Image (cartoon, rainbow, N blue to C red; front, side, top):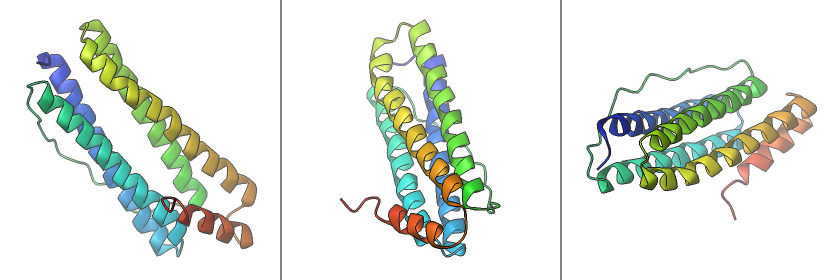
Length: 164
């Protein structure tokens, strides 16, 4: 059984993961509106991945004999200034999630909850990958610019995510 404090912290993280999924879906809708279907594809897959993270937490909370408590999800932004600004937000968001995961891990350490610590290792490693992917796309966008052939090529590249 999770302590009351850890149960709250895990439920807060569950909310953060569902909020992330919602944010990425809003970002995908923006990309679709900008005729960037490859960007939208990448973001929709990110939406599914974040939903999967939330469900991992959901299962863990239940497996530990604790209660899942769903919380309100704030409406995400609808508009972004540009594809570069969009991925600046993606990276900023992933860094925010990393901080939340690290705080959750610290809480598990303080409580000497070894099962939670072990479970959270996967999320810590996942955040390294998430930040690296967002950073790579952002840096490529900055080099390529937001108009012309480079953006079209990048859109096609992002369209291939999930096709292997």
